[in-house]
Length: 282
Image 1 (cartoon, rainbow, N blue to C red):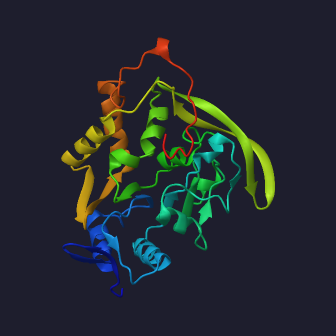
Image 2 (cartoon, one colour; image 1 turned 180 degrees about the horizontal axis):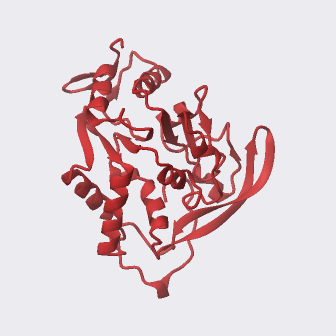
Image 3 (cartoon, one colour; image 1 turned 45 degrees about the horizontal axis):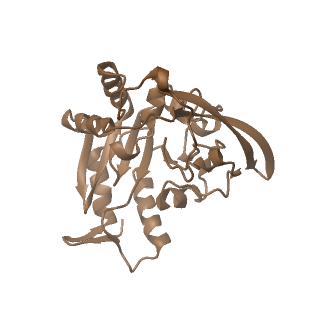
């Protein structure tokens, strides 16, 4: 691998080789499926590289891990606000690396208009055999959970508490009382064929708000050595095993069903969910 500087920091340059070495140290290569959340807040992008060159260099590092299946979330929650979803053209709001990845040759994207995922490699059933519950039964997350594959979640910059969407699938799995399935109907365009469809999103009731629980959960995972983290430039890279993450999440909910909420949930005061314009998270 030829050394290419990708970020600059006050302490020096960061190159693709050092990124690859950090990922190997974390064991990112030791899995069947690597599901990636990205932030790329490691430093100032190398101005000698174009944006596409920078993103290609990072993707090449990830492909170089030789993991059988790489997945990036490419959610477009705009379907909640009546916008058409095109499997080929709808941009994701999950970051520039995710958007670059989804447009690569040989990358396939799921037809879920709410929480689509883009996949490169084997195990295409994870995005092809999905149902119409975006974060529930037969979703990509549900298929991952029941696949018998070794699944890891990689966080390139962001914290687990910021963007670990799989937590919301676990809320579905463990039947939290403060979320419910809400249906959204609209048009999706797949292979130049336009169809009207209805998909369901597992949303919080309108007066339920997230608290600091996801960050406490993250700290517990790190303290127990379940989540592994290395410093990279101005930020960190973190990795987490699916099965262990699930066990600890269930443990937190068993401690209190309100563990991840700002306030105690009261069944008698629930109000319907109202979609948020430009929503990027559940």
